[in-house]
Length: 295
Ligand SMILES: NC(=O)c1ccc[n+]([C@@H]2O[C@H](COP(=O)([O-])OP(=O)(O)OC[C@H]3O[C@@H](n4cnc5c(N)ncnc54)[C@H](OP(=O)(O)O)[C@@H]3O)[C@@H](O)[C@H]2O)c1
Image 1 (tube, rainbow, N blue to C red):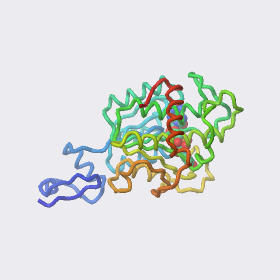
Image 2 (tube, rainbow, N blue to C red):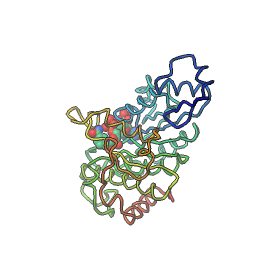
Image 3 (spheres, helix red, strand yellow):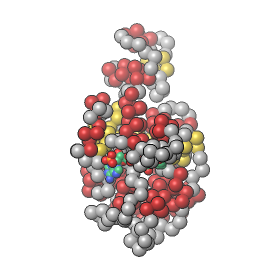
Image 4 (cartoon, rainbow, N blue to C red):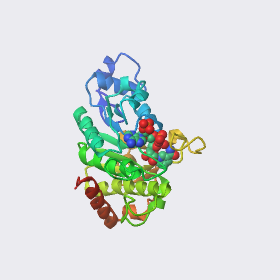
């Protein structure tokens, strides 16, 4: 028997290869083969997969034959997934600005089964006002920080966690005292930057607290999506390939926890994101705001 190495570390033996009726060169072919043979295929959940980077990442992973669970804000928005959904392992819905819908969303994901990886991608950018949610939170905090925190706590723990950060998280450093913008005057850019510092710190906290999980944060660069706008100078493909790589690759670099990545290169995150005291304080604030303790 001559083992045929696969990207994910499993191998096919020669008899299996001889039984394969089609060509075998591409990752997609190998995964389709494994799917037919009931070999395990990595299953990835991506929040905010109706548009932009989430949708592009979902398309790339589906193209490689992975199982992907898609997410739309509403059933109406799920129509945007009509081309990807037939190949997906499931489509789940829920508005991440609502704690109740976010909890319900976690339940839908768990019903499908345990994920191998979760890409916390959904996000909002410059909200014109605090935009108080039904739970009383600033919308930017609710969608960008509280939702990934809640989903992390409520979804059956995967092997890998990826959080979409931004280079702007460096501008979010400072106090956690008014994290929910109840006393400060609204500043959309500052709120976004803080939310990205939060998820970067969350990713690095989990790398510290859950050694069995590979947890990383990614800056996709400034790329032309609904959020990035038409004048963004970054490469959209480079903007999603790091998170897909962290989700499924067995490259040594992709299986190291606690990184902050840009275009598959590790970068230095803001010092606060790495600071255990800041991380602990943030986890306490998020537990208080959501009523859910992660640890
Ligand atoms: N684009 C950039 O230049 C850039 C730079 C740095 C970081 N990032 C980060 O990368 C991630 C993806 O950004 P993108 O550029 O792909 O943004 P995008 O094109 O605006 O897509 C955002 C996705 O999140 C979903 N979403 C937003 N609010 C939601 C809510 N309340 N409930 C459920 N889903 C919601 C959107 O759903 P709908 O389609 O229904 O709106 C969409 O699927 C974000 O976390 C962002 O902060 C982007």
